[in-house]
Length: 103
Image (cartoon, rainbow, N blue to C red):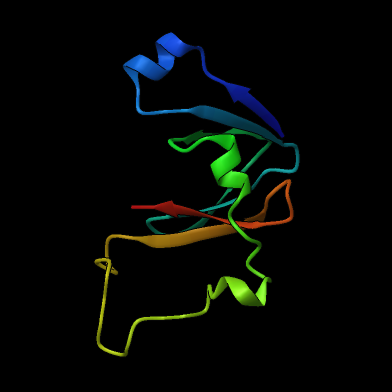
């Protein structure tokens, strides 16, 4: 996994702070309209609007003090469930879990 800082001009013209590129040598499945679709080896680019330091300061999901398992009361829906679906969960280079969401 490679972290790539963006030049100041790119930061001025886009909302992005840095990008990350990962080579998925084994490929993986992606959720398609009719179920999982296998995707062969490919690059996974990720674009971040926060600094690398801010992102690294996010505690690991296994940290009991992070309170990642605190959910809203039943009946409260913060996102339109039909429009957002988690398609995969990957282990980040820092040991933190990252979720890839596709709308």
